[in-house]
Image (tube, rainbow, N blue to C red; front, side, top):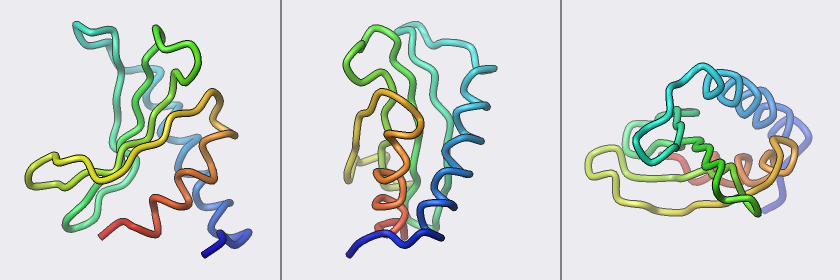
Length: 94
């Protein structure tokens, strides 16, 4: 299933907002910053910034809320590159 223009616009707004939030976060001991982009009843999507990972410094992770068990993830270089990934992950959010 392909993302519609409205899906992509929503994903871009969410991703830009999360990226702006991540910039004011302090780094963990592993030099990673992370914020929740959106949370459903059973799953959530996090955005993480990993500066040492030069190929894909930004990551979106879909995981279960209760257990933090990973479901899916995608790495990317820029916020614009991440928009289609977030749109796809939003379809899987429960």
